[in-house]
Length: 109
Length: 119
Image (cartoon, rainbow over all chains, first blue to last red; front, side):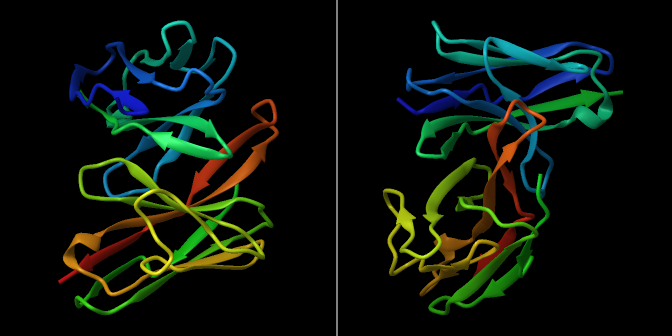
């Protein structure tokens, strides 16, 4: 089983829609979780850290479910500029991050 | 966050040659990492660049193929040695920083990457 798994998508949604997707992790001892956004041919950029049960930043909400070992990302009122690949990252300890393969979101006009 | 630069931004190389990639950060950081992202795939950690000691390599990566230097707290290099077409990839450095705006969370930030094509 992979350490971090994501639904690859693509999620193709109209502007203004809500889109949500999950990321599951295998190491129950993991303590830190992150969502990164990666645009085509660019480096990953930190979108949100996920700690405690989750957090919210504007239109983006991340939630952590430790019992089921997954984190989720929800995007409300989608904008065209939200089109990207969203990478889930899990801290395995020793400062290392393990990344999922990414979920592709395309927002259409 | 931090300002991270990488050189070169891209290169096309012949098989059998070596390429050294530089990573510079605008502040002193303890932890620096090197990742590889092959086409259509996610990031794979190559090694942790330790200042003053040898790098710590992940399973499947060895020092002879990917020698790393870390002469100080703001700079690191990764060399891709004896390249083959399978080494064509994006190579990214990252740094770990304590993010005081995010409850003192340790957070990794990435450089812009080096796109390598081996012919």
